[in-house]
Amino acid sequence: MKTFASATILTLLFMFPTLGAEPRNISPKDYLKLHIDAYNPSAPDWETAMAKLLESGDAFTIELIQKLKAHNQKSKPAATVTAVIDAARKRIQSETDAGFVKHIEPWLQAAALADVTCSPLEGVLVYWALKTVRQNIDRPGVRIELARIKKASDAKVDAEPMSALARKRAKLYVDQILKASSPDSAGGARLQ
Image 1: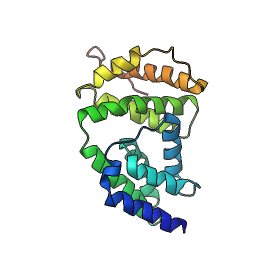
Image 2: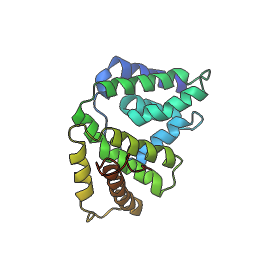
Image 3: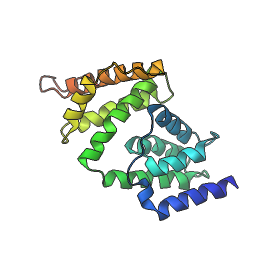
Image 4: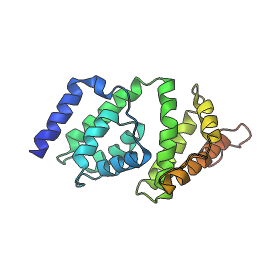
């Protein structure tokens, strides 16, 4: 019955592609959990995570799930993995510069949260987020968004101390990205 439900969810999302037209706001904590669950087909929430990523997966989703696809070519979830990758690619292809800019802060915050909590995604997400933003530094609005993130007030009180730490870490990432893209950096500073 669970497989039928998953197939139904996937079918509905493809029948109504506007459901995935604009990525939903996902907290950094939920973003990490979705991707951790998606990378592990034996996780109890794998099908739910894949259905959500079919609707809202992004460029990091593709990066991570392609590794899963490579390791599980003959496995049962291969069709689902391919569907999620294809849906995310379709969203990315139609993404504007402004759409890309909207992803920067959530990516950096999720990467920072992965870093401060020693998440299994820590290494891959931090490296990917810094590299992706750095490679797109000259897209309209990217430098402005990085400056906004850097200047954002730390006065907001968080219920979770890890969120405050992650926000501070994200600002450090902004500094790394900007330093690496500086004309004074010889060949670019090393990004984490």
